[in-house]
Each structure stands twice: as structure tokens, then as C-alpha cells.
Amino acid sequence: MSSADLFARAQLVIPGGVNSPVRSFGSVGGIPYFVERAEGPYVYDADGRRYIDYVQSYGPGILGHAHPKVVEAVTNAAAAGTTYGAPTEAEVVLAEMVIDRVAGLESVRFVSSGTEATMSAIRLARGATGRDRIVKFAGCYHGHADALLAAGGSGVANQGLSGCDGVTDGAVADTVVAPYNRVPELDDTVAGVIVEPVAANMGLVAPAPGFLEGLRTACDAAGALLVFDEVITGFRLASGGAAEHFDVTPDLWCFGKVIGGGLPVGAFGGRWNVMEHLAPLGGVYQAGTLSGNPLAMAAGRATLELLDEGAHARLADTATRLADGLARAFADAGLASVLPRVGPLLGVFFGPTEPTNFDEAKVLAENGIYPKVFHALLERGVALAPGAYEALFPSLAHDDEVIEATISAAAEAAASVPVA
Image (cartoon, rainbow, N blue to C red; front, side):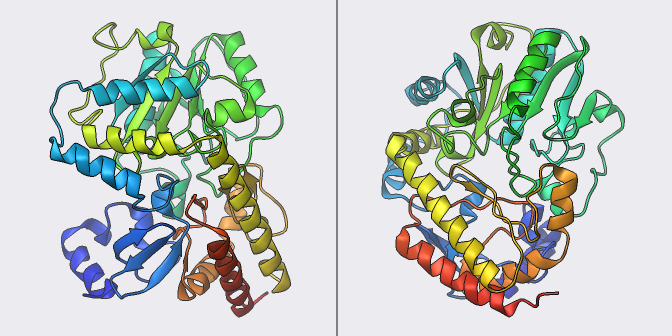
């Protein structure tokens, strides 16, 4: 059955035909391809087409799809049962692995998604400080919890929404939105500041020099907790994530994606004197039926075991070669572009100047060029995310041959896009 047929069926039983809005192709037009299988750097759709995949499930596929070690780990775990509602050794092992890699992280709790991780971290910050207000940054997406949807990037922005119906004024009354890359003034009503250390949900916007350090200083002065949303950057920028990469230590971390090896997972953690406020030790309640489920723990362990320092260096080198090649391909076709890169994370904007905040990113994301390039690349077997506010995720499976094929396809695609 074709992707078109499957999409028609899906729209009869699933709102919009998709289970996450960005998958609908709403911001780029057309019909989404339905994936039948994936392997390494490729996905294969229901129409028999193969794509070089830079979505990689929006970040979990750091090894590439269906890595044999991960598949083996999940298979073995599933054979012993998929969920118990009781503690397992696998949870302890993965927690130890995460803590060993992240300097300053002393305790971690697993959940089932990045949204759960951020909403739990915010509740914990409020409970630990006895304060109500949270500061976030415009264009940073921290999942779909009500209090954090204010001025969110990524899927919210891709759908052309400034907020979200159903989120009451009261739900965001204690959420303060500040411009990214500008250190806000804080006072003693602020429980915490949550930030993507690299903003990867408004395209890709790097932190300006001194921004993260300034947040650390401001939080210390106000007695607020600094929360790094490392759902994307965690274990991708470096073994210790963005905290290691930028040498700035937050009070709380949020993780996801990579640590589940492609299975549903999230985690939040921090210093013991903050984490001990969680039930059953303290009065901040958080729970989850599938938290720490054995399949995700097994996949996460297998993934982290393969992510040594050499792996991170290879990822950064791959992203650099991809960025340089795409920049040349677009320039040769007369298509103005900027490709911001932080380690192995890569973004693409079509315009002359790299953005530094959401307002600037929005101008480039909505100038109408990205959908044209997206479809031109898709026709040539290269899949980017179907939305201009997403990052590219090259994996360890994207070897030299794959990168060169991508650059060649980009040159053809760019040449086919009319230049105004």
C-alpha cells in the first residue's frame, strides 16, 4: 500500500493522520512518506523509495537506524518481559552510566519522554526552592507541558501557532519568556531558568559567548536553579553533553532521545540536595508506569557503550563535512544560506545572516525557501525534517560515501529552486 493510501486511511482514524503534528508535512506541503523500515543512514518508504535520513527520529538515532548491538539488546530484554512495574538492575546500570559521564550530576530519575523530564524538572525546581516563577526563552521547545508551551519553537512554530488552544492563562501565568541569548534579570520569585544550551528547535541557534555563563551567574545571585534541557544535546555534543562542551554546570538536567537508543525515554537529574525533594524522599510527587522500562534501559545502555570520545569526534567531523559541502552546493546555485553548527548538531537557514534568536530565525524559516529545497532534496533521495525549525542529525552511520551523495543531491536540488 502506498504512502498516499496509508495517509488517507490514517486521516480517518488519527487526527490529521499523524501522531505528532510536524510529521503531517503541514509546513512544507504534500503528503508524508510512510516508513516501512530503516537501516543505518537510510529509511525506506511504503512506495519502495530509499532516503538518506537526517531526521533520525529527531535525535535518538545517533548510531544510525537498527544498529545490530541495539537490536540485540532490545531483543534479549524483550524475551525476559517488556515491563514489570518493579525496579530492575538495568535501571541502576543506566543511571550509573549517565552519572559517570556528566560532571556534577549526582542523581537521576528515568521517565518515558522528554516532555515528562522537563515538566518534572520544573515541578522539582518549584518544590525545592518554594518559588513559583519559571523563566524560559522564546523559540526553545521543552515538550508540550502547558507551562512550557509559551513561545515554543519546533512543532509549535512549524504549525504556525503562537501558543496552544486549551492552555489557560493560569497555566502560563508563572512562566516568563525572555529572548534567547539575552541574560534576563532575576529576582527572588524565580524558581528556575530552563534553557536549551544549544537552541535546536528554532532551526539551530548557538549560544552567544557568555550567555550560558551569564545564566549561571544570574541564577546563583537570585537563588534560582539553572535547568539545562539536554534532550537533544545530551550525549551528542560530548560524552558529558552541553555541560561539558561549554563548561557550564546547571543544577538540573533533562535528557531523552540518545539515552533510550530509539525507544521512548526521558530522564531528569541533578545534585542530591535538589533531587532528595522527590517522593518518596520528599514532597515533590512524580511517577510513571513505564518509567525505566527494561527495553529502553537495554537500548540506552547499548547506545552509550558505543559512544566513546572517538565517536563524538567522528560525529563532529561528519557534521563539518556535511555543512561545508551543503554550503558550497547552495552557494554555487546562487542560493544564500547559513549552516550553523555546534559540534555534531547542524542547522540550515536560507538567507544571508545566521540568526541569534527566535525572531531572527523566524524570518528565515518562513521566507518560503525551505519547503522548496526540502521537496527538491526528497525527490533526490535525501530526507530532512518536514519543517524549517528543526535541526539535522547526522549519525555515525553517515559515512563519507553517504555525505558525498547528500552533497551531490543538494547541488542538483538547489539548482532546481528558483532564486528570487
